[in-house]
Length: 53
Image (cartoon, rainbow, N blue to C red; front, side, top):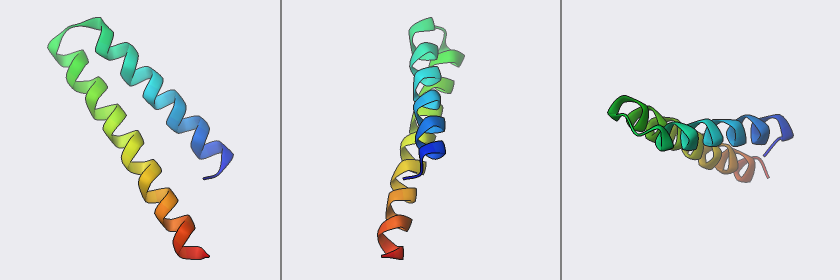
């Protein structure tokens, strides 16, 4: 994975984790969504990298 993508993924997971600690239903849902998007993007990106080899 590229360095910029890893940085964005890391920040997204951090923000999602912080929202999970807030405790309101909307913040928890948004946090779960952000973490899921970041993990999904990482898996897709790694799959694309493997496909290019």
